[in-house]
Amino acid sequence: MASGRSASTPRAPTTPRSPSTDSSTKPRSASGIISCRPRATMPSEAAVPAGAIEHRLHPLSVGFSLASQLRRAILPLIIGGASANFLGVVEMRSVLLIGLIPLVVGAVVRYLTFRYRYEEAELVIRSGLLFRRERHVPYARIQNLDAVQGVFHRVLGVVEVKLQTGGGQEPEATLTVLPLPALEALRERVREGKREAAGEGAAAGETTDAATGTSAGEPATGILPEPAATDLASAGTPEGRTLLHLPARELLLHGLLQNRGMVLIAAAFGLAWETGLFERASDWVAGEQSWLGPAVEGAAADVVAAGIVATVAAIAALAVAFVIVARLLSVAWTLVRLHDYRVVRSEEGLRATFGMLTQVAATIPLRRVQTVTIHEGPLQRWAGRVAVGVQTAGGSQAGQPGNADPHRHRLAPILRREGLREFLREVIPELDAPEVGWEPVSPLAFRRVVRGTCFVATIAAAPLYFALGAWGVAFHAAFLAWAVFYARRYVACLGWALKDDMVWFRSGWLWRRTTIARYTRIQVVALRASPIDRWRRMASLRVDTAGAGAASHKVDIPYLPLDTARHLRTLLAAEAARTAFRW
Image (cartoon, rainbow, N blue to C red; front, top):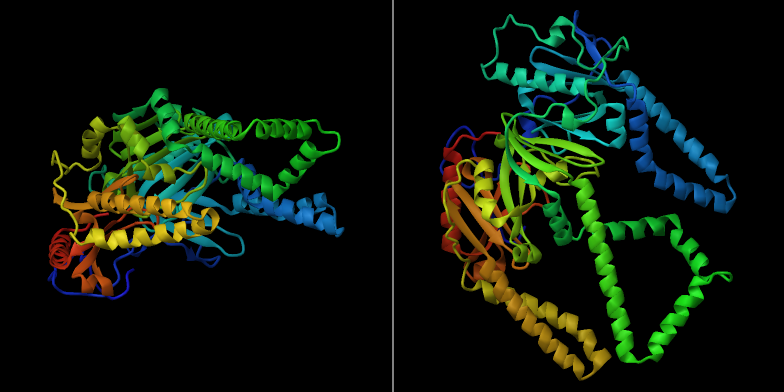
């Protein structure tokens, strides 16, 4: 937050208040309205009601839990074992065996102590041996059930389920793993619970499968129902209208534009460095009996002897080859990770399914969407494509491989620009404006930005004076010209608008992002003014919504004229207080 004075106006979800009143009250967090937080229980408190049936996880949960823990612990175990072996304290395999024992015990204990059961209005989850926890999750509060299936999951007919609520950034519960019939029973029970909570359910005398004794998961007696399907594609596919389907050609283009291969190469280099593969490779290449090292040295000497032109051409060829390899890796990763990507609109909301090796099914209830962001890079604009992301209440920006959450935030990884407006109307039904009339920031913004960019350009060019002498002046002039050009384009791309009961904010020149926030989702409107802002009679306006992460593109409009910023703050605060807040 910028230094200096700051005024914030949290939204009042129930009682309208004067928009001119400043308040330092913190905005409501999602967890404040969800009555499903874990609670510690004594053994007597954890008693199961008479007639209730508790369900276990699938017995294969032991193996999958152990594999998950082992993935996180294998690198520290290898490093510790190698260090102990180098110091002569103990052999490496002994360290690995000792480290494996608590992981196995933990996986077995978790399976034996984890139970869940269906109550009339809530899902009850019990876990823990020494420290017992019992969580009560009302069906009406469950936002969605995310299902993830890897290769082994599909072969064995099981699935990992993440239960999401609006109460925090982490899943309320993770069920590792369930048989597919248990997933379908859980989804059906959640749907029925939501309908009953909304007054749309059947008569109170009707009973559910859980009440009559039909087991959705594995009963505590150990009887396992026979799965009817082995993957997410053939089980539980919701009926609805397909909004987006990415064929292989679009995924190929997406892989070329995103260049995820650089991330894969960087990760591979980091892993090789940590595990000592670089040292082994250097011994293999430069060893006394190796033929590869002398061959490379001889080829490099021949290129250098051929002159500066040949040397530059060889370096350029290596750079081009590296870029090609990185792009090919990006394409391969995209084709595998986002295989058969489709978004379907159903009664549950927007449901995204994708994946070749690891299949993911993620649902986004429309009421949970807080902001929508349109991403445009230079290559995307050249190809006529955009990406659409959403920020949801209680969702996390970060995630592990195979998690549905990161892909929920990038709802449409690639989308034709001509189909953007229609797709946005499906996500935001209130959207009606054919075009957005962007309002600029203060005319003094360019002066503020160009001073900073010119300062950075001067710092970057300073070492060149010592290295290149007089040529440093030419590079400094080129850096300054770029700094001025960049500042002008950056300020020109800054803009805001108020359309269809929404606030729009656009920023970025090369990588442009446009964020849309509805008035009904606004929680805090903050006006900020640093000493320089006050001197120039400028201010920044920030609009906060629920679930905004640190890496998300927020509605944070800089370099506004002070009068305009005050007017916007008053207007948005009044609109937020006038509307009823809905999760």
